[in-house]
Length: 471
Image (cartoon, rainbow, N blue to C red; front, side, top):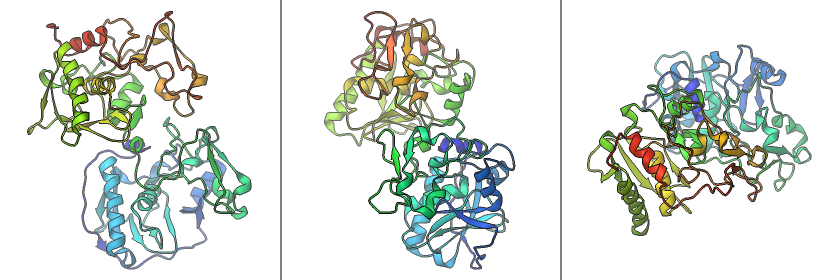
């Protein structure tokens, strides 16, 4: 979701401060403004666009905003009305703005004399306009709404997001239980055409902070109004999820927007991509093959597993790991939610490898380190269809993008396809039901998805990537 803000903004910087006080509030409830989907105040123009599948200014942004509704350069001026200028409201508002700033290219600045700006205030309920409406627009955080997650959600509307379940493709992922919805609230569950809501190729996001909960607008509080088709949880209001901050790629890689665009378009930032797809340019490789890391928050048993994975990379390749002292670029090992590497190759500054619950094994640690050194998954190779068959019908809904193959920007450096690579998916990864096969090798008897050790070709690939001929 959040990757899409790079379509909205031109640059990323952070600014935070105290707002200019602004006490005079515009009156709401004009005939040209109506409440929509429970917490959005829309202009007549926006309502007509949504209801008729039209957009006045051509292509709409994800969850639907025309270009002239975006905040110029991603800069959002804001003020706090007296009603919101209380310590318990300020905390939620400032922490919500901070989360958007830290994880997207949006920045918030206290208003001085800007014409277009957001005013936070306390009214009846939680609501926001959608996108930049021009002049002063308000976000209400009324009784029961003064929480971090709700503030993040309402700011999302003001930045341009509609609700996730309004997407035109939503029926592939959720079922609306119309009989359980209050009769006068059924309009809140409409879906809208591609003319209004364009998801720009981003997968449906059950974990989006912009998604309804499963009992929203129910006739009786125990009834379900939205069922997910894979049992996923919906309606969280705690934070922007991981795929909001980056785009989750192939299940365990959080890519920067630059890397995702490079892979999707078949372009490297400075030319071709290397094996399993990283720029050959030196700024994405670890200089001299030396990788600095920290492991301070990891308990001794987990440390031993990480160190054994590090030793395997050092034994069979020219890569060397050193504990960080003051170096700028380094990996932080941590216990997060799941197994993932934040990016592929050296990103600059701190980057993370998470080895959460179920991930603390030698092979998984070796695999995630492989991403941080520069490897994508083996089955992403452009020639993969010669070696494996993807059973698309067996893949879990919303996960098919993890099986994309990419252009010859992913260069295998002359190495044969490696069924035994520690970077290869297993045959049932992302399967639904879980016993189905999603990847089938064409070579009889070939096994895929091992997470024990580096294959011979893994070692050769890494040494070739770092121009090492000693091993």
